[in-house]
Length: 391
Image (cartoon, rainbow, N blue to C red):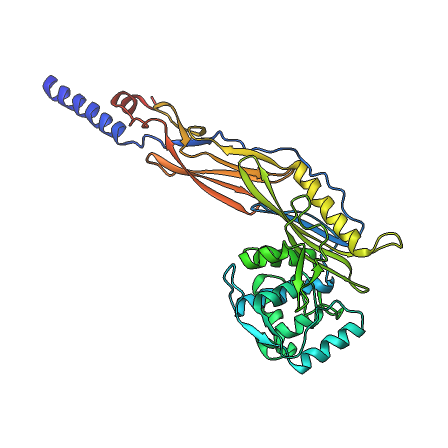
Protein backbone atom coordinates (compact mmCIF):
# COMPACT_ATOMS: atom_id res chain seq x y z
CA UNK A 1 0.00 0.00 0.00
CA UNK A 2 2.86 2.37 0.69
CA UNK A 3 4.33 1.72 -2.73
CA UNK A 4 0.93 2.30 -4.33
CA UNK A 5 0.49 5.55 -2.40
CA UNK A 6 3.96 6.63 -3.38
CA UNK A 7 3.16 6.20 -7.05
CA UNK A 8 -0.15 7.97 -6.68
CA UNK A 9 1.50 10.92 -4.94
CA UNK A 10 4.24 11.06 -7.49
CA UNK A 11 1.70 10.99 -10.27
CA UNK A 12 -0.19 13.91 -8.77
CA UNK A 13 2.99 15.94 -8.52
CA UNK A 14 3.99 15.12 -12.07
CA UNK A 15 0.52 16.01 -13.31
CA UNK A 16 0.60 19.29 -11.41
CA UNK A 17 4.01 20.11 -12.87
CA UNK A 18 2.75 19.26 -16.35
CA UNK A 19 -0.23 21.56 -15.88
CA UNK A 20 2.03 24.33 -14.59
CA UNK A 21 4.41 23.95 -17.54
CA UNK A 22 1.52 24.02 -19.99
CA UNK A 23 0.03 27.23 -18.65
CA UNK A 24 0.54 30.34 -20.82
CA UNK A 25 3.63 32.25 -19.76
CA UNK A 26 2.06 35.64 -20.39
CA UNK A 27 2.61 38.09 -23.22
CA UNK A 28 5.29 40.71 -23.66
CA UNK A 29 3.98 44.27 -23.41
CA UNK A 30 5.09 47.46 -25.16
CA UNK A 31 5.47 50.86 -23.49
CA UNK A 32 6.20 53.75 -25.82
CA UNK A 33 8.89 56.08 -24.50
CA UNK A 34 9.45 58.42 -27.48
CA UNK A 35 7.83 61.84 -27.20
CA UNK A 36 6.75 63.88 -30.20
CA UNK A 37 8.81 67.08 -30.43
CA UNK A 38 7.42 70.56 -30.86
CA UNK A 39 8.65 74.15 -31.11
CA UNK A 40 5.81 76.04 -29.48
CA UNK A 41 2.09 75.84 -29.18
CA UNK A 42 0.94 78.56 -31.55
CA UNK A 43 2.02 80.11 -34.82
CA UNK A 44 2.22 83.91 -34.64
CA UNK A 45 1.05 85.48 -37.92
CA UNK A 46 -0.16 88.96 -38.78
CA UNK A 47 -2.55 88.10 -41.61
CA UNK A 48 -3.31 90.56 -44.46
CA UNK A 49 -6.38 92.75 -44.35
CA UNK A 50 -7.71 91.24 -47.58
CA UNK A 51 -10.54 88.70 -47.55
CA UNK A 52 -8.53 85.51 -48.04
CA UNK A 53 -4.93 84.34 -47.67
CA UNK A 54 -3.15 81.04 -47.18
CA UNK A 55 0.33 79.69 -46.41
CA UNK A 56 1.77 76.19 -46.80
CA UNK A 57 5.19 74.57 -46.55
CA UNK A 58 6.60 71.97 -48.94
CA UNK A 59 7.33 69.46 -47.60
CA UNK A 60 5.05 69.95 -44.63
CA UNK A 61 1.56 70.89 -45.75
CA UNK A 62 -0.90 73.57 -44.71
CA UNK A 63 0.43 76.05 -42.17
CA UNK A 64 -2.43 78.50 -41.78
CA UNK A 65 -5.14 80.50 -43.50
CA UNK A 66 -7.37 83.53 -43.14
CA UNK A 67 -10.84 83.84 -44.56
CA UNK A 68 -13.76 81.57 -45.46
CA UNK A 69 -12.08 79.63 -48.32
CA UNK A 70 -14.84 80.75 -50.68
CA UNK A 71 -14.51 81.38 -54.40
CA UNK A 72 -13.51 84.93 -55.38
CA UNK A 73 -12.17 86.40 -58.66
CA UNK A 74 -8.45 85.80 -59.27
CA UNK A 75 -7.63 87.87 -62.36
CA UNK A 76 -4.45 86.91 -64.21
CA UNK A 77 -3.58 84.27 -61.65
CA UNK A 78 -5.74 82.24 -64.06
CA UNK A 79 -2.79 82.14 -66.46
CA UNK A 80 -0.99 79.65 -64.22
CA UNK A 81 -3.49 77.02 -65.34
CA UNK A 82 -3.24 78.18 -68.97
CA UNK A 83 0.54 77.73 -68.89
CA UNK A 84 0.27 74.43 -67.01
CA UNK A 85 -2.05 72.94 -69.66
CA UNK A 86 0.16 74.20 -72.48
CA UNK A 87 3.09 72.38 -70.91
CA UNK A 88 0.95 69.30 -70.35
CA UNK A 89 -0.01 69.21 -74.06
CA UNK A 90 3.49 70.07 -75.26
CA UNK A 91 6.09 69.06 -72.64
CA UNK A 92 9.12 71.31 -72.96
CA UNK A 93 12.67 70.33 -72.06
CA UNK A 94 14.61 72.84 -70.02
CA UNK A 95 16.68 75.07 -72.34
CA UNK A 96 14.53 74.27 -75.38
CA UNK A 97 12.36 76.73 -77.30
CA UNK A 98 9.84 74.05 -78.24
CA UNK A 99 7.45 74.04 -81.20
CA UNK A 100 6.11 77.27 -82.66
CA UNK A 101 2.74 78.70 -83.62
CA UNK A 102 2.17 81.29 -86.35
CA UNK A 103 0.34 84.51 -85.46
CA UNK A 104 -2.87 84.89 -87.48
CA UNK A 105 -4.88 87.93 -88.54
CA UNK A 106 -7.36 87.05 -85.78
CA UNK A 107 -4.56 87.10 -83.22
CA UNK A 108 -3.42 90.55 -84.41
CA UNK A 109 -6.99 91.90 -84.28
CA UNK A 110 -7.43 90.58 -80.76
CA UNK A 111 -4.15 92.19 -79.69
CA UNK A 112 -5.30 95.61 -80.90
CA UNK A 113 -8.70 95.20 -79.25
CA UNK A 114 -7.12 94.26 -75.93
CA UNK A 115 -4.65 97.14 -76.22
CA UNK A 116 -7.47 99.59 -76.83
CA UNK A 117 -9.22 98.19 -73.76
CA UNK A 118 -6.15 98.90 -71.61
CA UNK A 119 -5.58 95.22 -70.90
CA UNK A 120 -2.21 93.66 -70.24
CA UNK A 121 -0.91 92.53 -73.63
CA UNK A 122 2.21 91.42 -75.48
CA UNK A 123 2.53 92.74 -79.05
CA UNK A 124 2.22 90.29 -81.94
CA UNK A 125 2.53 90.78 -85.72
CA UNK A 126 0.99 88.90 -88.62
CA UNK A 127 2.97 85.84 -89.64
CA UNK A 128 5.25 86.04 -86.60
CA UNK A 129 6.27 82.69 -85.17
CA UNK A 130 6.01 82.35 -81.39
CA UNK A 131 7.82 79.46 -79.77
CA UNK A 132 6.25 77.61 -76.88
CA UNK A 133 8.83 79.12 -74.52
CA UNK A 134 8.03 82.63 -75.77
CA UNK A 135 4.31 82.02 -75.25
CA UNK A 136 5.00 80.86 -71.69
CA UNK A 137 6.99 84.05 -71.08
CA UNK A 138 4.11 86.06 -72.51
CA UNK A 139 1.70 84.30 -70.16
CA UNK A 140 3.67 84.17 -66.92
CA UNK A 141 5.85 87.31 -67.08
CA UNK A 142 4.18 89.75 -69.48
CA UNK A 143 0.76 88.40 -68.44
CA UNK A 144 -0.65 89.09 -71.91
CA UNK A 145 -4.36 88.41 -72.19
CA UNK A 146 -3.97 88.07 -75.95
CA UNK A 147 -1.22 85.47 -75.45
CA UNK A 148 -3.57 83.44 -73.25
CA UNK A 149 -6.04 83.16 -76.14
CA UNK A 150 -3.28 82.21 -78.59
CA UNK A 151 -2.21 79.44 -76.21
CA UNK A 152 -5.80 78.25 -75.75
CA UNK A 153 -6.42 78.09 -79.51
CA UNK A 154 -3.14 76.22 -80.03
CA UNK A 155 -3.89 73.58 -77.39
CA UNK A 156 -7.62 73.03 -77.94
CA UNK A 157 -8.71 74.84 -81.09
CA UNK A 158 -10.80 77.42 -79.22
CA UNK A 159 -11.00 79.25 -75.92
CA UNK A 160 -14.28 77.49 -75.14
CA UNK A 161 -12.76 74.03 -75.54
CA UNK A 162 -9.70 75.08 -73.60
CA UNK A 163 -11.81 76.43 -70.74
CA UNK A 164 -13.48 73.04 -70.46
CA UNK A 165 -10.02 71.48 -70.16
CA UNK A 166 -9.12 73.99 -67.45
CA UNK A 167 -12.06 72.97 -65.30
CA UNK A 168 -11.43 69.26 -65.84
CA UNK A 169 -7.81 69.70 -64.76
CA UNK A 170 -8.85 71.68 -61.70
CA UNK A 171 -11.02 68.76 -60.58
CA UNK A 172 -8.15 66.31 -61.10
CA UNK A 173 -5.83 68.44 -58.97
CA UNK A 174 -8.34 68.73 -56.13
CA UNK A 175 -9.14 72.40 -56.77
CA UNK A 176 -12.74 71.97 -55.70
CA UNK A 177 -13.46 75.68 -55.21
CA UNK A 178 -12.24 76.84 -58.61
CA UNK A 179 -14.17 77.71 -61.77
CA UNK A 180 -12.75 78.99 -65.05
CA UNK A 181 -14.73 80.80 -67.75
CA UNK A 182 -11.76 81.83 -69.90
CA UNK A 183 -7.99 81.44 -70.27
CA UNK A 184 -6.87 84.97 -69.37
CA UNK A 185 -8.61 85.86 -66.10
CA UNK A 186 -10.08 89.13 -67.36
CA UNK A 187 -13.60 87.79 -66.88
CA UNK A 188 -14.55 88.04 -63.16
CA UNK A 189 -16.21 84.64 -63.51
CA UNK A 190 -12.76 83.08 -63.12
CA UNK A 191 -12.88 82.33 -59.40
CA UNK A 192 -10.81 80.33 -56.95
CA UNK A 193 -9.42 80.32 -53.40
CA UNK A 194 -5.90 80.80 -52.01
CA UNK A 195 -5.76 77.11 -51.03
CA UNK A 196 -6.70 75.95 -54.53
CA UNK A 197 -4.23 78.30 -56.21
CA UNK A 198 -1.49 77.05 -53.92
CA UNK A 199 -2.26 73.47 -54.98
CA UNK A 200 -1.75 74.48 -58.61
CA UNK A 201 1.39 76.50 -57.87
CA UNK A 202 3.06 73.59 -56.08
CA UNK A 203 2.24 71.28 -58.97
CA UNK A 204 3.36 73.67 -61.69
CA UNK A 205 6.60 74.56 -59.91
CA UNK A 206 7.69 70.93 -60.23
CA UNK A 207 8.20 71.65 -63.96
CA UNK A 208 11.71 73.11 -64.49
CA UNK A 209 10.72 75.36 -67.42
CA UNK A 210 7.74 76.78 -65.56
CA UNK A 211 9.88 77.33 -62.46
CA UNK A 212 12.57 79.13 -64.45
CA UNK A 213 10.19 81.44 -66.28
CA UNK A 214 8.24 82.67 -63.26
CA UNK A 215 11.57 83.59 -61.64
CA UNK A 216 12.45 86.00 -64.49
CA UNK A 217 12.26 89.70 -63.53
CA UNK A 218 11.64 90.63 -67.18
CA UNK A 219 11.51 89.22 -70.70
CA UNK A 220 12.73 90.47 -74.05
CA UNK A 221 9.75 90.59 -76.40
CA UNK A 222 9.14 90.88 -80.12
CA UNK A 223 11.33 91.96 -83.02
CA UNK A 224 12.31 95.12 -81.17
CA UNK A 225 13.42 93.05 -78.14
CA UNK A 226 11.49 95.38 -75.92
CA UNK A 227 11.87 94.52 -72.22
CA UNK A 228 8.61 93.68 -70.46
CA UNK A 229 8.84 93.72 -66.69
CA UNK A 230 7.34 90.94 -64.58
CA UNK A 231 4.26 92.13 -62.72
CA UNK A 232 5.67 90.20 -59.78
CA UNK A 233 7.96 93.07 -58.78
CA UNK A 234 9.31 91.25 -55.74
CA UNK A 235 10.57 88.17 -57.58
CA UNK A 236 14.26 87.71 -56.80
CA UNK A 237 13.97 89.68 -53.55
CA UNK A 238 14.01 87.90 -50.18
CA UNK A 239 14.49 84.65 -52.08
CA UNK A 240 11.05 84.88 -53.74
CA UNK A 241 11.04 82.60 -56.80
CA UNK A 242 7.51 83.12 -58.21
CA UNK A 243 4.74 82.53 -58.96
CA UNK A 244 1.98 84.73 -60.47
CA UNK A 245 0.10 87.97 -59.90
CA UNK A 246 -3.32 89.22 -60.88
CA UNK A 247 -4.99 92.61 -60.67
CA UNK A 248 -8.43 93.65 -61.88
CA UNK A 249 -11.25 95.77 -60.51
CA UNK A 250 -13.20 92.64 -59.57
CA UNK A 251 -10.27 90.58 -58.28
CA UNK A 252 -8.33 93.29 -56.48
CA UNK A 253 -4.66 92.56 -55.95
CA UNK A 254 -3.71 88.87 -56.07
CA UNK A 255 -0.36 87.21 -55.49
CA UNK A 256 0.47 83.51 -55.53
CA UNK A 257 3.98 83.13 -54.15
CA UNK A 258 6.84 80.70 -53.63
CA UNK A 259 10.02 81.17 -51.63
CA UNK A 260 12.63 78.45 -50.98
CA UNK A 261 14.27 78.55 -47.56
CA UNK A 262 17.19 76.65 -46.03
CA UNK A 263 16.49 75.63 -42.44
CA UNK A 264 19.25 73.60 -40.85
CA UNK A 265 20.15 70.92 -43.38
CA UNK A 266 16.74 71.11 -45.07
CA UNK A 267 15.56 73.07 -48.10
CA UNK A 268 11.84 73.79 -47.93
CA UNK A 269 9.59 76.05 -49.99
CA UNK A 270 6.99 78.41 -48.63
CA UNK A 271 3.92 78.57 -50.86
CA UNK A 272 0.78 80.61 -50.47
CA UNK A 273 -1.58 83.18 -51.88
CA UNK A 274 -3.13 86.54 -51.07
CA UNK A 275 -6.37 87.29 -52.92
CA UNK A 276 -8.76 90.23 -53.13
CA UNK A 277 -6.47 92.91 -51.71
CA UNK A 278 -7.83 96.45 -51.99
CA UNK A 279 -5.58 99.37 -52.83
CA UNK A 280 -5.39 103.02 -51.80
CA UNK A 281 -4.61 106.22 -53.72
CA UNK A 282 -1.11 105.97 -52.32
CA UNK A 283 -0.51 102.26 -53.00
CA UNK A 284 -2.00 100.18 -55.84
CA UNK A 285 -3.86 96.99 -54.97
CA UNK A 286 -1.25 94.77 -56.60
CA UNK A 287 1.53 96.31 -54.54
CA UNK A 288 -0.52 95.68 -51.41
CA UNK A 289 -0.83 92.01 -52.36
CA UNK A 290 2.90 91.75 -53.10
CA UNK A 291 3.81 93.40 -49.79
CA UNK A 292 1.45 91.12 -47.87
CA UNK A 293 2.76 88.00 -49.57
CA UNK A 294 6.33 89.01 -48.77
CA UNK A 295 5.33 89.67 -45.17
CA UNK A 296 3.74 86.23 -44.79
CA UNK A 297 6.88 84.61 -46.19
CA UNK A 298 9.17 86.45 -43.78
CA UNK A 299 6.92 85.87 -40.76
CA UNK A 300 6.81 82.13 -41.34
CA UNK A 301 10.53 81.94 -42.17
CA UNK A 302 11.39 83.44 -38.78
CA UNK A 303 9.45 80.69 -36.96
CA UNK A 304 10.67 77.61 -38.82
CA UNK A 305 13.09 75.27 -37.05
CA UNK A 306 14.88 72.07 -37.95
CA UNK A 307 13.98 69.46 -35.33
CA UNK A 308 15.10 65.87 -34.77
CA UNK A 309 12.05 63.62 -34.76
CA UNK A 310 14.16 60.62 -33.74
CA UNK A 311 17.88 59.83 -33.64
CA UNK A 312 19.65 56.62 -34.54
CA UNK A 313 20.05 54.47 -31.43
CA UNK A 314 17.38 56.39 -29.52
CA UNK A 315 15.06 54.23 -27.42
CA UNK A 316 11.49 54.65 -28.66
CA UNK A 317 9.82 51.96 -26.52
CA UNK A 318 10.36 49.34 -23.83
CA UNK A 319 9.36 45.72 -24.33
CA UNK A 320 8.55 44.11 -20.99
CA UNK A 321 7.81 40.50 -20.04
CA UNK A 322 6.94 39.04 -16.60
CA UNK A 323 10.00 36.77 -16.62
CA UNK A 324 12.73 39.36 -17.46
CA UNK A 325 13.78 42.97 -17.27
CA UNK A 326 12.56 45.47 -19.95
CA UNK A 327 14.47 45.61 -23.25
CA UNK A 328 14.73 48.82 -25.31
CA UNK A 329 13.37 49.10 -28.82
CA UNK A 330 15.77 51.52 -30.56
CA UNK A 331 15.62 53.49 -33.80
CA UNK A 332 17.94 52.42 -36.59
CA UNK A 333 17.71 55.76 -38.38
CA UNK A 334 17.88 59.50 -37.71
CA UNK A 335 15.00 61.61 -38.99
CA UNK A 336 14.75 65.39 -38.83
CA UNK A 337 12.26 67.81 -40.33
CA UNK A 338 11.37 71.48 -40.47
CA UNK A 339 8.50 72.33 -38.12
CA UNK A 340 6.52 75.43 -37.32
CA UNK A 341 4.93 76.31 -33.94
CA UNK A 342 1.76 74.37 -33.34
CA UNK A 343 2.42 71.75 -36.00
CA UNK A 344 1.04 68.39 -34.94
CA UNK A 345 3.57 65.56 -34.79
CA UNK A 346 2.39 62.01 -34.10
CA UNK A 347 4.73 59.08 -33.38
CA UNK A 348 3.44 55.51 -33.14
CA UNK A 349 5.47 52.35 -32.47
CA UNK A 350 4.52 49.15 -34.27
CA UNK A 351 5.91 45.91 -32.78
CA UNK A 352 4.35 42.49 -33.16
CA UNK A 353 7.12 40.34 -31.74
CA UNK A 354 10.44 39.08 -32.97
CA UNK A 355 13.23 41.63 -32.83
CA UNK A 356 12.10 44.40 -35.22
CA UNK A 357 9.32 46.88 -35.72
CA UNK A 358 8.66 50.37 -37.04
CA UNK A 359 8.23 53.88 -35.69
CA UNK A 360 5.56 55.65 -37.74
CA UNK A 361 5.92 59.45 -37.73
CA UNK A 362 3.42 61.98 -39.07
CA UNK A 363 4.24 65.68 -39.28
CA UNK A 364 1.79 67.74 -41.30
CA UNK A 365 1.46 65.98 -44.65
CA UNK A 366 4.82 64.21 -44.31
CA UNK A 367 5.18 60.57 -43.21
CA UNK A 368 8.10 58.36 -42.24
CA UNK A 369 8.41 54.67 -41.39
CA UNK A 370 11.57 54.26 -39.32
CA UNK A 371 12.93 50.74 -38.66
CA UNK A 372 13.43 49.89 -34.98
CA UNK A 373 15.19 46.94 -33.36
CA UNK A 374 15.49 45.40 -29.90
CA UNK A 375 18.74 46.46 -28.25
CA UNK A 376 19.17 42.87 -27.09
CA UNK A 377 17.22 39.64 -27.58
CA UNK A 378 14.23 39.17 -25.32
CA UNK A 379 15.03 36.02 -23.26
CA UNK A 380 12.64 33.12 -23.30
CA UNK A 381 10.97 32.26 -20.00
CA UNK A 382 13.18 29.96 -17.91
CA UNK A 383 12.24 26.72 -16.15
CA UNK A 384 12.10 28.31 -12.68
CA UNK A 385 9.68 30.98 -13.89
CA UNK A 386 7.50 28.39 -15.61
CA UNK A 387 7.33 26.25 -12.47
CA UNK A 388 6.75 29.05 -9.98
CA UNK A 389 4.59 31.63 -11.80
CA UNK A 390 1.27 32.21 -10.14
CA UNK A 391 2.23 30.29 -6.98
